Image: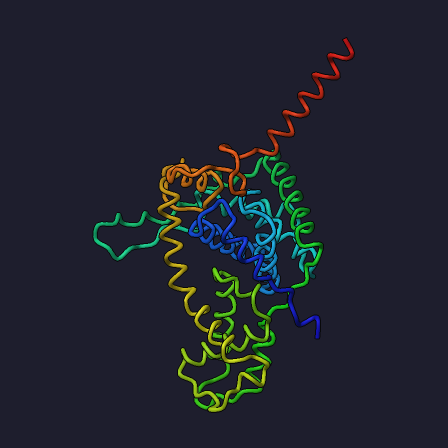
Length: 338
């Protein structure tokens, strides 16, 4: 049964992530939401099965329990999680494939995180959908080489942080199996199955990190319960969830957590648009990056670091730091030779 269980986050890990990070909670949520959505979009364009993309989402969430979010560019750590998960699956993808996909998703031609229409009258209308301009996501060789290096670096950091434990058990297949054992008298199982899987996929974005705090059997039961409520299916009158080793308290927490993702996600979209503002190209929206978060921290009068509380005033550019050390070493060699 061990292959059907996942390593769960400890209360200490969850507390430290929320309490000791240099980032305010709302910025942590915005980064988490946008990066997980980016990972899902990349999985679709790479034509990966949802099972592979969902595993990448879970590994990314586990990694951010161990290391600060600002250590790496968000898109780089997303690409590394997809690359690592696909490499361990029957559907590997090449680094160049990932570079092309992420270069497009981060370009002005991408519709990812396009500003939504708002209901308030005083809000500006959303801009028209971006025009597809191939030059926006053209990938020169030096850009690819830089992306490749950063992605491999992030992959090694993920493996190190997770102690090479990349096992992820998903609840999707369990949910389908449980549905076969249940009898919903007035609803087709096809309808309720689709709704159940939709809840499981949406839960990957949950700020409660449901996939890190509950086992797959509990997630499957909660998704079935929510789906049955949505479609008006008649559920068994007994406490049927106990058959699948889920108690009422855990079920209630997961049901509320899953149902709250939709409203929370809409709020995150609004917060991201407000944080992103106008990009260099003059268009609103787009994936938030580290520089956007750093700018937001400066506007709030907070120090900007690489994710640790009490960090330095300026973020450390690891490539620039490495180049500086190499220059110093070369200067020492030249001085000793002369």
